[in-house]
Length: 96
Image (cartoon, rainbow, N blue to C red):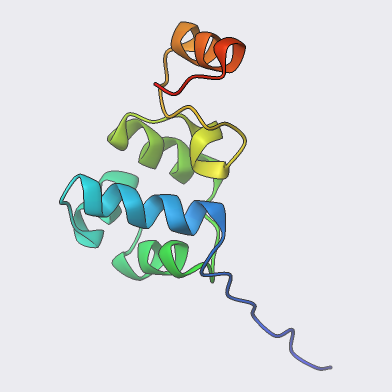
């Protein structure tokens, strides 16, 4: 049986936004790994698009950076976890 080829999507929304957050917050992959309770290699794989975090890990990462999971996944353009801010941004079309 042939082995499935692993596809890396370096430009996936999650990979791009995770790299952006790590750079913005001037943190490290090691720090994110500790907070998310995963290995450093796992966070690196999330950043390069070769792996996807579990829902629980995604939640921990979002909480650490104080952003919404929807934003991390590209389902929303609003980083805020505050539902009122998200609603206002979506209604008005303005950014935070």
